[in-house]
Length: 225
Ligand SMILES: CC(C)(COP(=O)(O)OP(=O)(O)OC[C@H]1O[C@@H](n2cnc3c(N)ncnc32)[C@H](O)[C@@H]1OP(=O)(O)O)[C@@H](O)C(=O)NCCC(=O)NCCS
Image 1 (cartoon, protein in one colour):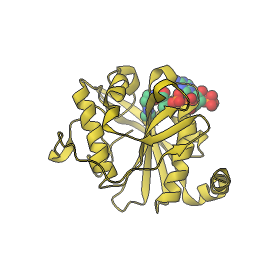
Image 2: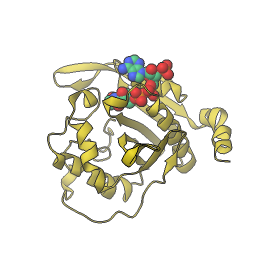
Image 3: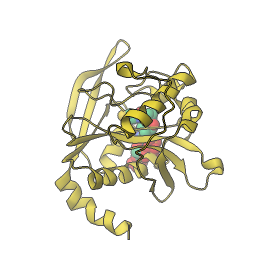
Image 4: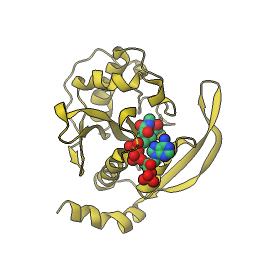
């Protein structure tokens, strides 16, 4: 949920402005899409322009973005820019996985949030995980479930040696997810993350390819039959 230190345009927030002068109004159809991923309760599917209002509904809520690198969305136009950036830059140019989280069997396939990953280094050997869920559905284990699927997809589809995630120390639900998907805490960057006038402690977690292979690869293959 945080921007790459190397390229501010890699991870856009639902409310951030289009970076690097990219045209915000482009309606070009995307070509590359991440595949649909299924878990027991969830369907993770690529984003589309139809998702703008669903994302805006939670991105405008300050509580949802409190510990993220996002500003609260001021208007649906901000969210449109985020979706367009995902389709045009993160999908087509960078092939970064970003999914809408849907509850299987819910009326109208309600979208609960997004989960995704982005390259944290230009050599594309390290991927970082980020996620956001609408507040009504917190604490039901949904993001832990989705993050397992994204973890396995990232190691299976990218030539990476490390998956990482970072969060504000007070964001207990977020670092618990990191632990539940097998990541190790590497430490706390004290008063590192600035939000408004406040500097928060920031925890960093990672899972290396060899650890994933030992602990999860076999299960991942079995799950897929
Ligand atoms: C952080 C967030 C993604 C957690 O998603 P979630 O689906 O509620 O998480 P899960 O239900 O999978 O919970 C994972 C663990 O954290 C715990 N947890 C979740 N929210 C918690 C909270 N606010 N306080 C303490 N523990 C919490 C759960 O109990 C669970 O632990 P357990 O299995 O030991 O019971 C969600 O709260 C969110 O979207 N927040 C706003 C956006 C955000 O902060 N994103 C992350 C930026 S790094």
